[in-house]
Length: 306
Image: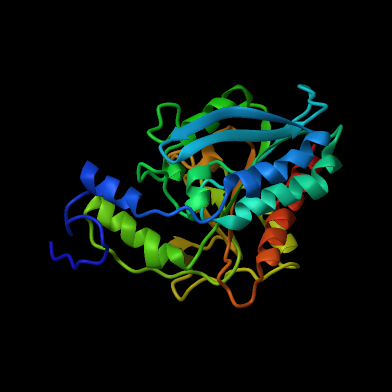
């Protein structure tokens, strides 16, 4: 195989060794604070919601408690509405959007449903603005109990008792320019494969479950987000990131088979949001607002179906 060197770690054409992974990890620099940005933002919410630790990560770089926010008046007779963010630590509006939703709208569902929000699944990666965990593993391909990613295994354990009680699961993500400039080249280098450039869509889109598509649910979220920011168009092949567009701003993945966060539970309604924060047409606040708009529209739609 003819492989051109493109990434500063590893030997082109060969999967990384343990030493290569250690070299990659040593290159990563802490750029922001999980304690300040996330734990600090959660603290005031304790006045209105239950906040619990569902696990903790102990890495050489520090100790990271994993927190979940839930309805104080939890009622097992009501459906569960689930939001997850920060599965990929660099996708900032997933974390900030989840926190903004709880702060501004979490109380709207009191007595109607049980709210469960996990705003930052991957705190180590959040601090370093990365996709992977410290072991160079993508949590969002490894959501299973025996996961090699501690971040993923902890969330699976949290949700296992609720698997058949979750009505909606909305997993908040971003698609960024760094997907092509850093993360996909790093993936190819790690796996010893050739990097093939892709395209970054300009705008918001959703990823539905191919095994349980809910087009009306996806549409109501797209319509709500379109009032906040622009929706990603299909490319010349009728695709977004290599997948056919099945409705404006919507593609489908087999979320369970791929080990994606959105596939953890047996929720009837699932989606993965994808915000484009590098667009010249969107501000950071618009990105957060888009995440919140999607969550509110999706939750309201699902509850209205009875």
